[in-house]
Length: 122
Image (cartoon, rainbow, N blue to C red; front, side, top):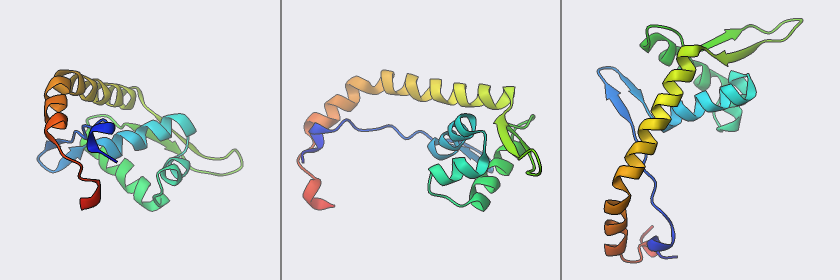
């Protein structure tokens, strides 16, 4: 398969001192919003509940307001949801990625046209 037959993806990671926000954390937030569960979000991404919970705790600690609120399980079950801040962070990150993709589209096409077939080099 030629590289030119597949569009390249931009995987944007924002880096601050001691904290990064990138495609993995954004995807986790998207899954939490969709499923209402940290466990289900982690499972959808092939990660353990412990890893998903650790990432949520890291994100909650990094921002002034938490991004995810959770309730423990019990008779009525637990759950998780994005806070207003969490929704704004996710929407802003997605908008940044979209803007980068749109801004770089012509340059990416230029690079793609210069590539050879690298499928056998993997």
